[in-house]
Image (cartoon, rainbow, N blue to C red):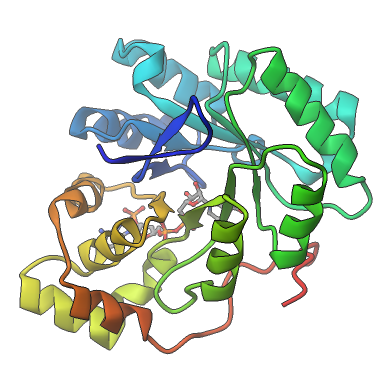
Length: 271
Ligand SMILES: NC(=O)c1ccc[n+]([C@@H]2O[C@H](COP(=O)([O-])OP(=O)(O)OC[C@H]3O[C@@H](n4cnc5c(N)ncnc54)[C@H](OP(=O)(O)O)[C@@H]3O)[C@@H](O)[C@H]2O)c1
């Protein structure tokens, strides 16, 4: 599996398995299938309430800890130093792991100074509980504020798909050595119907999801599609075999842009 560097010691696989809305025993089969097929990167969050089943499936898989990359996220009500440390310890306990590969601030919260949160993140890293520090749903200004603390931010996980390609944010993050993870990479199914996507799928004789996931990978963007059915899980994984031609990458880059899809009332986007 192709990876990119987050920091000097940690590499993240470019394709991961999203787990939002996969909870309890219903999550078991999709998770087992994903590991069987070859996924070695799982994206979760405290908010998803599925740490326990992920921990169980990982344990039962018999895979060595270092073979699987695990990301979790701290919720925005736990960004005070002591709360964050407690949340991380609980998360590890639930996942039955001794460390996370990547720990993200799930959403910014202007009520808590970013310095306090990132210093607590750094403490977790220094103590070996997490391997890399990241953020999620950070806009350009949030990134600037985080970078100013001097603490190394390695990743920003944001909504990103062909009809919402985050061009400016991607350029800004690249300048600041912050990698990007695309969440909702197929726009929860909506971008599968885009004309350019269906035309390229026909031309390459592949699935629309594979066009999108190949475009993300070839753009150096990590993607974490969520799927429940074995067919979807496999199809998404096999996007790793697809190579789009440069002119087709350009066509994907030029798709007409739409407003963001994920906009909860507490979001602090300023763009
Ligand atoms: N950081 C954040 O704030 C944040 C926010 C949202 C999401 N996320 C993360 O990103 C992950 C993915 O985002 P998402 O779940 O919102 O959306 P998504 O991955 O874009 O789309 C998931 C939906 O697409 C369907 N699907 C998957 N593969 C398909 C395929 N090959 N063909 C047709 N349909 C397919 C799934 O159906 P089936 O399930 O029926 O197979 C599911 O309904 C989440 O699970 C979560 O880990 C993070």
